[in-house]
Image 1 (cartoon, rainbow, N blue to C red):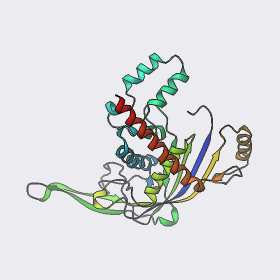
Image 2 (cartoon, one colour; image 1 turned 120 degrees about the horizontal axis):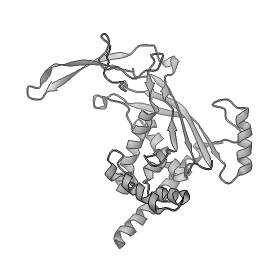
Image 3 (spheres, rainbow, N blue to C red; image 1 turned 120 degrees about the vertical axis):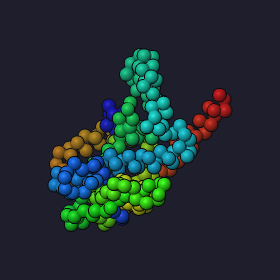
Image 4 (cartoon, rainbow, N blue to C red; image 1 turned 90 degrees about the vertical axis):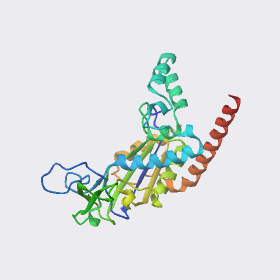
Length: 286
């Protein structure tokens, strides 16, 4: 899957907290301070791990795909529901004569969501950097809120269950940067659906979501697209441009990925429709 460079999509933008955001760093061991601090970087500024963003998007897209066909998205939390379990992987290794056959067998049996986001047996094509705070939107202070556990019998505060927790204030912005490499058009379409969910404030982040925390909005600034599949001359030109470029530069080889969003999304719908019919035919014959 990654032995030959085919394409690359770079995405940059800003993620804004619409409501307060809480991504926990676990219970504090400090004698003074909040009970439940948020994740911070080395400079004590708020940080959103890329894994939190990616995990929230994956969960939403899994729910969409399962709504179409349960085989499209395996449950990553339960090995028995993986599209390839550990036992099945050992069987594949024993039956495939070479690495090429093994790779093809793994890809053919991997569920659709894992092809893009990765799994224990296949690498992810989608990478999200940790989101760092935009300094102009951060005034250096966290909000602290009180929480309490309720005794279900008395419907009052449980004894000794009062605590406080930190949140990042609403209106704080974070730099967003992601890369996807060697993706098929339908996988890019799936990614566009996920990004649009963040754009329309449909995917909350962090904890306390039942309290209204974690509503965020993503605004995409740039989408740089490079497709060199079976075009060695274009790849050579791109490599030459890289030598003289800086991070974030729009190289001459790049195309505007935003212009391909509709094409990629259409490819996704076509791919899902064809595989849904294929699964239905297989089930009927069985």
